[in-house]
Every structure is written in structure tokens, then in C-alpha cells.
Image (tube, rainbow, N blue to C red; front, top):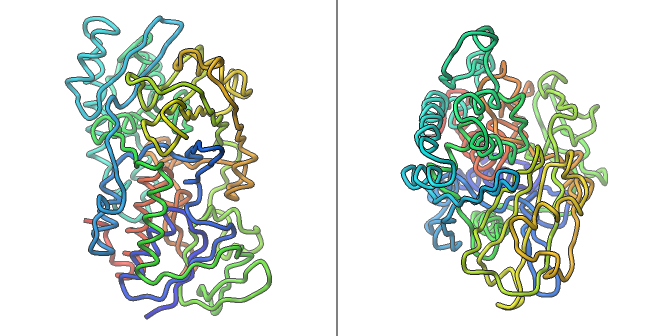
Length: 472
């Protein structure tokens, strides 16, 4: 039985801890804050409750597998998880288009698009998603289910999206997602594809066409909500860790990873306390640790620069009941600006049926950096929003950094193939034996599902060693 120290109590870190505890190891999680869940937070006031992180889960099979592998009670007995249907509503005020798309139904989506955008729209959309499926099939295992091996950045650096080639500039270089959307969908329909990708904090103008796998993933596997808010999923994972005898130490920031004889040997906490361990798992952004404390070469953790954005979020308490026709998630597209409006049909989010809790969020940028701008766009999705508004709370990237420690409030995107490998996260192994990376800032990247996948990868590498070839 090895002593394993885990830095951070985010979703990827807890998923790793639970799997390692089942394998018979003594696992202790050290968290700088006062609670678990990382970015999966909750804000409550006057009977209203809001998710302060992800509002929906894609690829729920990741957490189903976690619960199957770590205990007798499956996920569905621990949380009440429901599929959002319609999956999403798109509002394009400048085009006069308002369309809701069903969940996990390629035929239903095509029919809705034909009605909203005209003949041929559904066929063009399905053609693009079909090519995205080919990219998904080509990269799913090395990108999501296997450790990032030496040379993987080269092998995954090429764009797997089988874009239709034409003469001119795009014959001499790989097209971006925005170019593919414009060429293969065109006009307002292209905004649906680029908007879905932009919601992950990825710029369609510079992203490879392989980013189309994200809309494909959503449409194929659906969007899922946990009643009581996504925080309930974090609670379920935390409780599973406790059942497996994982220990948690809150208010325990980590100053340094200790190395003895070239191998990770424990932690030095912020108060100077030293903790011995046989293996260390860093479940936070490793750049949160002081640069001098990183025991691996700087190039092993690529500098992010300013390329990973945070989010600005409005938590809105509204008078008046939620309409029965309201859609859980709406994207409002407007002249380069975009907001996401979340309206869960969940009594746990509001004091009574005569009120509604709404969350509005956006990547800060032109048209989405000021709360008033976000409200203006959100009004396109919520009729009479300003007249119904009781109060609002604003959460900026600086607020997110203060709450979670994420530098600049940055939200890690999922890893993507293409772009020469620059959209891959660092491998789960490091240059120091016994030191591993988990969570959204490690392979295969951010998002609830992807961060959860790191649990299987890191636990497999620790338990089975270098011969581990990935989850089955």
C-alpha cells in the first residue's frame, strides 16, 4: 500500500483519488480552499441557487464508469441525472432566427434546421457532423482514452477532420474551423457550429477544423443535468471518495513538491509542514505552484500565455415563474458577441414556483465584457428579463481566481488534435518519477468529462506502470 498525496480537490483529482483508493492505496487530498469540487461550485442567496461552474455534463459515461469501478452503487443511485431536451436553443437576432434543437437526434436536428434555415440546411449540417464523427473515431483513443505517449504531439498534430479541399489558399494549408464552417455551412448556419466551439473558450478563427468534434460529441451523447445543480455531482464524487477512505485536508495550500533522489517524495504545505508520500498527483494547474518549486523542466509544462480565457458570469434572481416552453441552454449570437443562458427546470434552484434562477455567461470580449452588455444579449433569450430582475451577482475572472486559484480565472478547454499539437495539454506523467498530473490542466484537457478521464489515466499509470495502455 503506497502513500499517495493529491494536490487539489477538483473533479479530476477526486476521480483519481477514488480509483487509487480502490486499488488499495492510502490517499490523502490537500486542498487550499475550504471545500471540494474545484470549479464546480454553488452560490446560494435568498432561496436562489446557481451553478458557478459547468452547467451541463457531456459524455456522462465517464462518471458512470467511475462509480462502477469504485463501489457498488452506480451513479444513477447517487444523483438524479436527466437529459436536456431540447438540448440547445440558438437565437440569432440579426438574422431573425430562433431555433431549438432536440437532444441526441440527428434526424430531429436536421428537421429543425431545415425549418429554420431553409432546404438543404439539415443535410449540410449532418455532412459536417459526419466528417466530425470520422475525426472523433480517428482520435478518440489516443486523444481521450490513452496516456499521451512520446511522439503523440507529432502524431496528433495533424488535423484529422476530412475537410473538402478546394483550389486556392486552403490547398496550401489546413483550414480553420471558421473557414470550414463558412465554406461547408455558410451564412447564419455557420454561426451555430462556431458558436458551440466558442462556448468552450476556443477561438474558431484559429482552431483547427477538428474542433467540430465538440458539437458532434454534444449532439451524439446528449447534454445532461444533475437535479439540485451540478454541484450535486461533485458532492457524489466526494462522498464516494470518503466511502473509499480517502482523507481530505482543507485549508492546506501546497508550496512545493518535494523530491528525494530524483523521485517525488511528498509535499511542503503553505504553513511549512512537510508531508511524506510515495507518489504525488498534482490535480491543479501546475503553474499555480511557484516556478522555483516545479521539479520538472519548464518546457514540460508549456506556458499558456494569455491564450486561455476565463468567464464573466451573471447570476440572476427573477420574479415570475419559469415558462413551460423555456429551454435549459440558449446561445445568443450577435455580431461576434455570444452569451450562454442557462434556465434549469429545477425547484432546487429557486425559492418557489413564482421565481426563476438564470445564469448568463460569456468569454469576455467585444460586446461581452460589461454586465450591461450581457443583460442586453440575455434579453433576447429571456422575455421581459429586466422587468423581472430582482437582483444580480456578477462573477468576473478575478472572482474565479480568488475562489478556485485558477490563474486569471482561466477555464481549460478540452484537448484537440491538429494545430501542430498546440491544443494538447501536458502528459499525465512528468520528468520526475512518482509525480503525475490530473485534472483539466493535464491530458486530455478541461471540461467535466475530460477532467474525469484523467482519473482513469493517472490511476492506470500508477497501478499498472508504464505498460498501461489506456482505459477499456
